[in-house]
Image 1 (tube, rainbow, N blue to C red):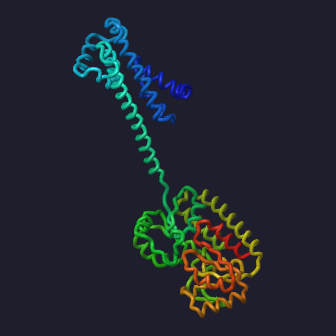
Image 2 (cartoon, rainbow, N blue to C red):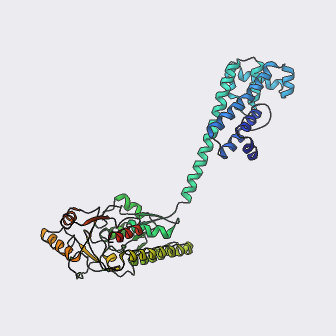
Image 3 (cartoon, one colour):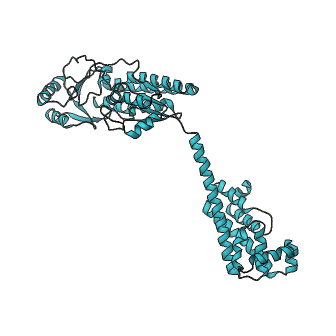
Length: 419
């Protein structure tokens, strides 16, 4: 049947439906379903099937209408008993009974008997067309519903497990190594500060339903919410991606050359190619623990990602040309980046607080001494103070997004701004 349909298309469908509408034993329903399964247009399939089948039915009608009862009975093998039974079924209802011409085995008898009874041909044609049209519409809609039902069941059966990560850059690392084996979602939306973000109740519910939680390490919302996350989902596997990273202690909020060593951990560990390789290692280890079956895949993708990170590192070193440079930034998010490449980060934000006028004046003096050429700002922080300094020193303001999913592109953009 597939070869027949592929060869003859809608013409074959019409002819086949015509044969099925006559007295020959053939199923137009099977033909319609085959056309639908092969991707033929469902509306055209219904239309041409109806035209062919109604034509076959009207052929039977006119055979009864024009023929003699004796040879009609002989040719169509209709006994007197069957004709009389059909007449009783039709009696009092007239030509509109052609609506039931789609009924298997009975349909041909109805149309032939309507011809023998000289029923109104236009009403026969109309009622027969309505019945056969509804039959094919219901058939195609039913097939569509069954296909979609099993497709949805298949999607649910094949749904991948979910890993929740804290920030978008960590989603970059995780997706690159996990491939299609896990769905990865991040808690902190891009453009929102992870220092102060509060997850929504819905996010907490979805986090509890995840297969694992990958935290970046020391950002503010993690520190504030980890106890509640643990209480809400005590069985949720949690992996810390700051493991084995050489941490900077004491936020780089100071404008003097010697940064004071504090007890706080500088949380922006991901803004570093050196740390990026370690984060990739940690992600790969976690995935292998969660899904050892695909360990070989994770190791291969980990190697590819590591190669990309090394290339990014080499590109940044080429751009910076190993020259020590100082730059100004509102929020000190590039401490590890500065450490990797021998740069000095000068922060406008003073120990987490907005700068005073006196502090701003000190910054202006220091920027002159250090020949600062660029001020980095982030869209989630106020830029008014940066604008004041930029106007005073005629500096370029560059907007960066350390929380961008495109981790490698963002680091390269930052390096190029320092050229």
